[in-house]
Length: 346
Image 1 (cartoon, rainbow, N blue to C red):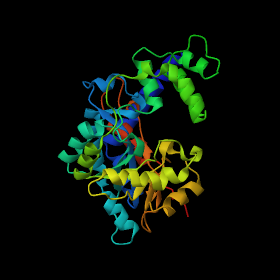
Image 2 (cartoon, helix red, strand yellow):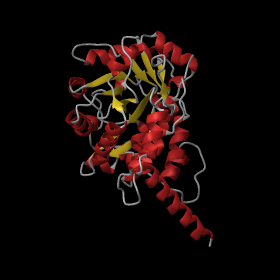
Image 3 (cartoon, one colour):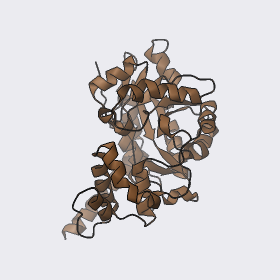
Image 4 (tube, helix red, strand yellow):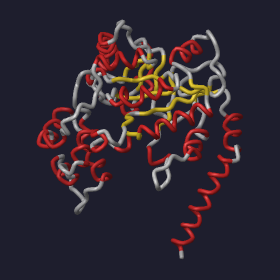
């Protein structure tokens, strides 16, 4: 009986969402509430399921290319999509942002951004901003977290084995993706030398033989295609855990600039894993980054112009589709339109 009541409640909630969006009421709410704001959306990977990388990518950070196209159309309908230069100009008091401004961003530096995201952005004449990890440029393999996800998805790595190797106690027979993410979290908490030692026995099984990260030529293709290049650290280490914060900030900036033609030092950055402290944020700004982006899921007020420290909103594919995998505009609207409006620093 309880299950039946719960099912009815879910169905009614779904109908209400569809009505609010389909009737235009949710759009009206958004136009009134978020008129003087800057929304920054965050993507990572965009891949066509026919591409072999689809079989080993992290599903929580990957969007099907066709769904990315649907997201673009949704954003064009409800926002005025702006470039990094427009945000910088508004920050400098040169001109105001349009109503309901939105900036599209990508993290890390995945090669699939060039193959699948860039053509769709160019087809709609849309700008974007990519934050690249300096040390991945020209590297084939992704970060150790994504490699472990790949090994697990390909049936080569078991979560329990990883937990045991890290010195933990695995749950009985646990080999779900949640078990794996808990094991990865244990590795993330280790110092680099210990983590490398624990990871070493799994290294061969986590290599899918494919190239995942951008090379310099692709980085320049993105820049020439209207995608501004920003920084995402040197090593992808969470900055509160960085051994050399200067290397993660100024050093990485010089590395990325050397790959760009012309060699222009990035003026923007985002924090790897979304982790930072107010002191680190200020240090990044003092290092010359005019805009610093967090992963705090907030909408940025712009009445006095955008602040230098900005929130971003990310979302998973599972949160914007129905049970059949079909895009649901109402779900994306509810996810984006209602986020808190907050300036992150004084």
